[in-house]
Amino acid sequence: MSASGRFVAIRRDAGIDVVDVQGTAPRRGFALGAKSPFAIAGTTLAMLDDGVLRAVPLEGGGGEATISCFADRLAGFRGRAASAFVVGEPATTISFDGARGRLERIAEARADAQWFPLHGRAVLSVERERLTLVTAGRTQPIAHAIEGKVVGAAPLFGGRAVLVITRDVATVIQLASSTIMHRVRIAGPRWHAIAPERGLLLVGTGDDVVTTIDLRLGRILGQGRAPHAIAELAIDDDGKSLVIAGPGDEVSVMRLDALGPLSASEPVPDVTVVEPPAPWHVTSVEPEEEEEEPESEPGLPELLPLGL
Image 1 (cartoon, rainbow, N blue to C red):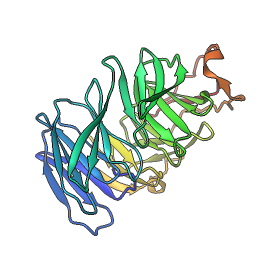
Image 2: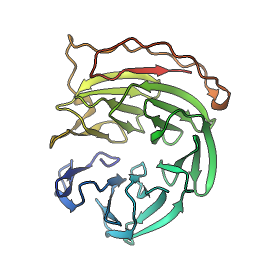
Image 3: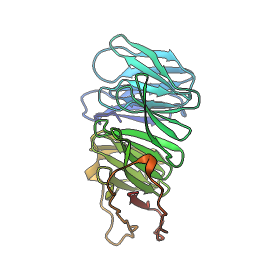
Image 4: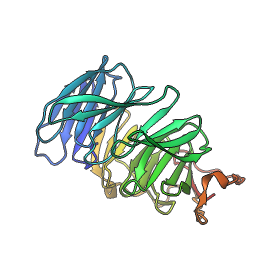
């Protein structure tokens, strides 16, 4: 889904279809291998297939562009004006100039660093369990000792904070002071989606239940039911529109507030909200011992927002 929520890319057997949710542009189809990645940055679609990266503008003028690129990882930068992508491992930032129809390599990571694209040209670099913000060649260490392998990251609140996601923990870090604002424990999520401008994290376990977490306050905002089981879910930057792909051919495009309610008699796991203390510097905090969590019904995620 594009940052504005207007364009949705849906994988089909022979490639992908791009749908304009507003209905003002025709559906467009693109050939793409079944396991080849694609991503949208701003209003630019990128597809990585058979050693070639192809960029296609979805609105406005400008032409397509291609560049040789042998990789299997592709992620777009955040924001409505974004037009760049992080490709491969070791990672390379490739920028798309739609006016001139050109793709250009503009930055490369060190061999042992993993990059996650943020706003503009800023990336979060994960290297030997250290997090660094890299912008135009400048580096800013922002945190240490993030537990577990980082699987996702996104800027929050106009770039004032960053969300770092490991397999079972989401951590919100304020960039100006390198302080941890919230930690939220997520028990075994199958997928996650982030609305950076609204500060929402959506998670699920593979059934049809969506749990929404407010990252401003570090609390559970609510739970809702999708029209079908969820294999993947994407949300726009403002946290309003969703596209939901099921394990088969099911695809739903809807608003977040249109998710169905859970049944009153349906068991829902208890959620304990722990208010965070005053912010601290990440390097000065000793980890707290965690209490045992009560058993809960299967099928729904267990989430415990933690203020450490």
